[in-house]
Amino acid sequence: MGQDYEQFAANVKKKTGIDLTLYKEAQMKRRLTSLYEKKGFHSFQDYFQGISRDQDLMNELLDRMTINVSEFYRNYKRWEVLETKLLPKLLEKNKRLKVWSAACSTGEEPYTIAMILSHFLPLSQVQILATDIDENVIARAKLGVYPERSLNEVPSEIKTKFFTKEGGYYKISEEIKKTVTFKKHNLLADPYGGPFDLIVCRNVLIYFTEEAKSILYKKFSSALKEDGIFFVGSTEQIFNPSIYNFKTADTFFYQKI
Ligand SMILES: C[S@@+](CC[C@H](N)C(=O)[O-])C[C@H]1O[C@@H](n2cnc3c(N)ncnc32)[C@H](O)[C@@H]1O
Image 1: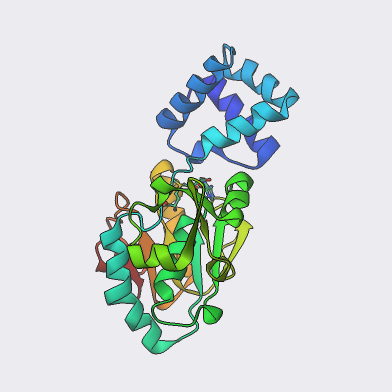
Image 2: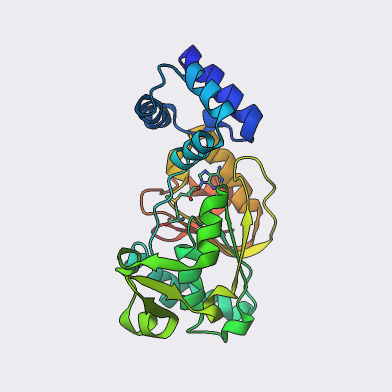
């Protein structure tokens, strides 16, 4: 690791609690270098002095470190598998599912889970925990207002039922909003609660080193009930699920043994 970046990572950890060394280095370094150069800094050291003085620069750094893109029903076919194959089995055992959407970004993912669960249960019985490291995205998730492009994959009856169009934006219904509790949580540092019936953690593990991922899989597995389901992103296959007490339930779904 370059010394300049290494020192920067140590300083950022001290200041924010976020450990950059657990994120894939080349990718993160590239993202942050292009950001500081754009701002007129010449080294990570120089840049750290900048962010220490200026909260706006700090917020920008946090924004760049955390990649926030999301959308409703991202990879639609996977959500269909959850709805038609896996949820009915989970619900056979227990109608009050404990669900966690980890690294939920601006809320599209936990709200998608609520919309799917609404096919099985009254929404008053649905309770989803949604967490992210980034307070800015949590604030936006709580607001629940989305541009049209976030809704590309939303089935039309769901769109009619749970969204109202206001100007160019779509506002999510209060009924859906009420099912989700948002909290700040760092997957790399904070305790995982549980036990959960379903944990959805998609499109964040790809940014972490292999060592960090392996620790996280263990923690997710321990936070699940027996037979509970772990749903990952469509580039995030686990190669040796049995090491973590998982068996493959379907592509990108793992069941706790
Ligand atoms: C690409 S978004 C994924 C959003 C959603 N899960 C999806 O698949 O559409 C990645 C999210 O991971 C969050 N994140 C990054 N590092 C994290 C960490 N250490 N703990 C918790 N969340 C983190 C970012 O803030 C960002 O909102």
